[in-house]
Image (cartoon, rainbow, N blue to C red):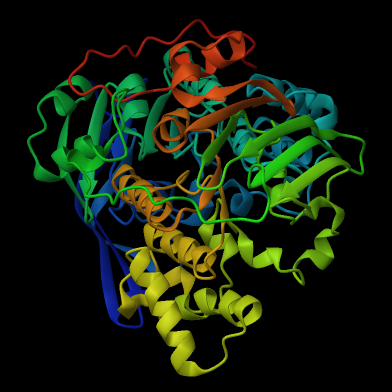
Length: 559
């Protein structure tokens, strides 16, 4: 390796907790050369993000560096002051944060926020910054960037917020880009475009990039070297092809076994045949037709934007239907209308033979159907009450929808739901911030199934999970469906997950159905060009196969 752009040597970071100091990093060694794309993989809590934040000087007040050093272009910045680091952030090094909604200012328009970075570091005029910000939004594949410049973060989908963060990070042409899960929440085609763009920029400008990801397929496609972290240490590091062709460390081998391939099934994930029960017959229902029958669904928002345009589909009792498509295609909007958290503009939503779409969203919670239709949200942390323990979160729908009031009956039902999702009982007294991402996902699922619904709407439930946790959650969902006969409406941008979990699939684009049918048929013989584009963009993990890190020529990149 040439002289490293960034070197981390024996880095140790400790956080103050009520139970005493917690050592998050325990002697991390990493080195990144100019222009190199390096991957850092590992589970939540392994120290990936802490390493990046320490390198940027962005540890919170409870975290401090207690050992080791960080050097940028040979200069020691381990304990550099904020005054010294502030002008370096954005121009020398920049970071794409994992949670874009938390990182963006909620009261400033996105165009203003990108413009702020450009004016602060490049000295552009307001007009120049506006033009440059517009071009950056176009670069990260925003439709109508001139109009979107005036949007606030809450008016954008999670994937669109992620693209805003990427635009801000590359705006000032940094020498080092620390990308912490930069494609979480993006559909596969946008993910490919963004990664091709980022890797192309790294090559074109000699910019180094550290890709922090839980997606081994993404890492093997785009990274020359990969470091594997576990419990605050780098346990293995090698060239991408060599690392996954012959993983030496037991933890690396576990990650490889949990990563989906083109041939993976729910049963085979994590390297073994899951002991799943036989499928039960679906629960009986009153209607003679499908359990859910959506007809000509339309959603037009107050600003005139059409989010969903004439979508129709059915789900049989006990069946599973996947909705896939790019960010902004209408997936989550359909999920919220089907679960009656949002009113439709037109169309019918027939559940169990009854038109539940005729019941206003604000009145639906009073009906008997509220218990029958439950939803698991994409971001478990945002969807859980921060003041509720896991017990309270699961107990709340049991109190409201089932009418359980006694302490003994609530405890019995909550603990039963926790056991069904594999959540340890001793975690029920913890608040959301005290749980890992996988544990929070289990609480969200337990809360939804506690009232024994007949239809479970799942909105990207595994989008931000590590591959090992994702494998467990997918097997859990399949087990629950087989045991209970519940029907699933599964929303995802991850076609690989949909292939394993869903019997039927609908491909959406701009609020309309592009293609629909049996999942196996769509994957093996898709008819629509857009569907084929989605399938071709899936970064499947192929252990031991040669990968290419050569990006396409990148055009339209602002200078």
